[in-house]
Length: 240
Image 1: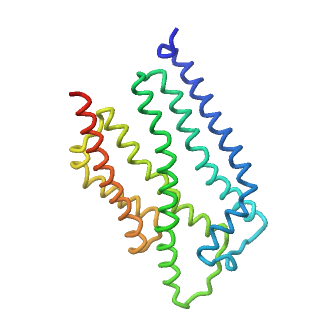
Image 2: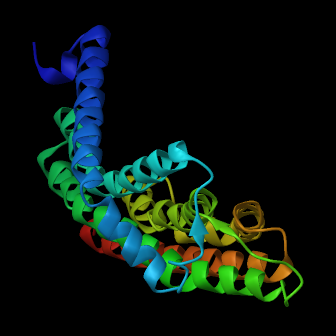
Image 3: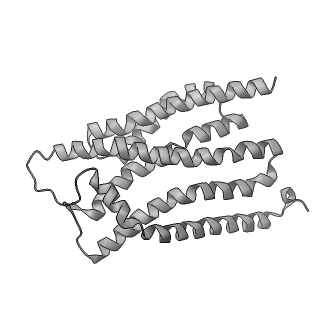
């Protein structure tokens, strides 16, 4: 019996093994990252000059911050392994050409995730934070709790790591013939609306933060349209 003709339960068992492997790598990565959490913490707060303003409300907050930082960094480490495990699961059903093509996506998935995190942290997060702090204008005594500060940071930054994967998804769907540049142009209004809603939901409730969050998402969609055009043309040339 070939792998392509495996019974359904065997496929589920194979998928379960892959998921368990990913979970184990994530847990081990998080455990290792716990030893570097203090260094990450100092680096993350030093750029914004908040190292003397962050506070904790209890011992459990310290533990929570440690696991929060370690967990997020472990996600970045686990992503390429998770993509590789997914490729191993679907590879038996693909042709040799399709295997090589999908395998080439794995480095792009990791690099785009990191690029999204860097973009969110270096550009979007500081602008939103500084705008919100500027609204204080001496009216309130600000006390930053470590837990809330890092949760706010992750809620702003992490979605960009996920959203920056869109070009890879677009290339994959275009190669499969599911997506075309023409279809993406027709869907532009709907896509803009959805992305703006995502930007508003992910950002604090003010116009500037919503704008800072939404504009990069709209630009990302236009990049995806361009990527779809290039992929579609290359595919058309190969099929001639």
